[in-house]
Image 1 (tube, rainbow, N blue to C red):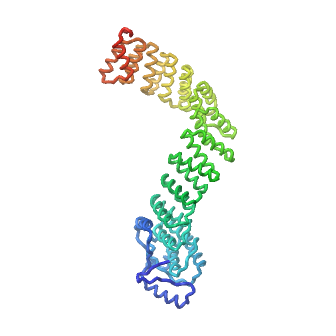
Image 2 (spheres, rainbow, N blue to C red):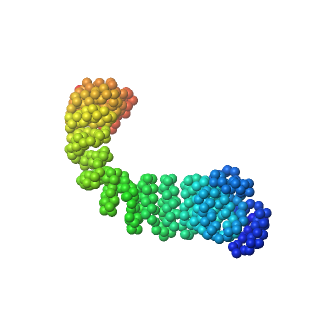
Image 3 (cartoon, one colour):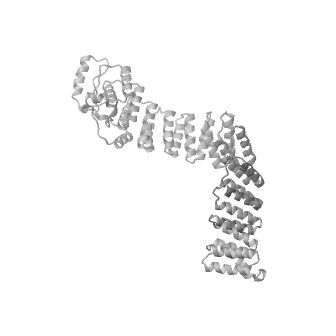
Length: 524
């Protein structure tokens, strides 16, 4: 190892030299200025230069007592360290001594011993070197850690553990990009990087949500014919799932299975969640069955996820089979389970079954929420069960839960479908009384109900109460035409244009038809 003095002479004391030669060399070394370490890596040098601008501490300015209690002092420049005379020249003994100093956080003493061993040409073992790097990094001496790291690399003393320690420290201090720069430089020079180092970098990228760099590392790992471990694929799946990259997550999982590796519980849960979002129920169900066959007990989240996935795909029977497995596993269904099952029945057009399931849920201990109730109200609307929708609405109000405008809209829509215009008006008035603000959908549904129920006075009153809008006028005009009130429709059409509103295509078509075929329409 080269530790060059300003005079250009390399200070080198070899084991086996006589004591007189060592004393003579020591006296020559005492007259030399502080040693400096030549930097070869541009990325590492930049990290060192930019990381800390604190004042450097020189060994020459420290007293003997301060050297003994240096655990609270943090040097910022390794260039101020001078080699000391060593009576002991056995590398194993000196390595053990260096190891103890690092464990006790004697930073300056450890650096002096390291420099002295380098001056004597004594190489510490890998355990001592890694301990020195770890000591410097945990005491925030990143500059010195990088300097020692350069030396270890030049002397081929750096191990995979050394790389991992340095990369983690740089990522924590400077961020993912700086760690990637150092890794890229090390990767181009080193041929012995193993899966552990790649896993370290993939983990660093995962913390920064940098899935692009994680994918690049994955490809480099395969190009080097370096087999990924279970941890490699677990990290990749987790990163791709969190970053919304389902295709990459599934690709990593497939490669994991192809390489004969058994996925862990977290990986399988992540893949199931990906399949749920993508609607890939076959792959999700296959992974779920693999989880059960491998002896892994899925939790409630995994059960709910696959039930939701099957429900969205219209595989209602499969969803209820998973529900039975959930009960047999001793897990209690929660609100997410019921929501997934209710949605599954509604999407499959099994509205009566959805209402029966809602009744079952209502009688249980599970607390109802607006979403569950709205699914039941949608089923009532499909079945034209306006009376049942009213009962559900009253139950929602009695439970003091928040009743959104959507719930009232669904009840009014059920009344419209069942031709119960007067009931729809009463629900609307009740909605206003409870200070629930109606929206455009409320007004449109109520107007359609009133038109088909021939409640013209209510239609006029609603027009006066609500701020004019194109959708509102278009709905009334079209309803009047369909009920044979062409004259009233024409007057309202003129009012629509007078308010600066635009008719839609259907309204224009009806007006053109009225103009060309007036006898076909009624006058009032």
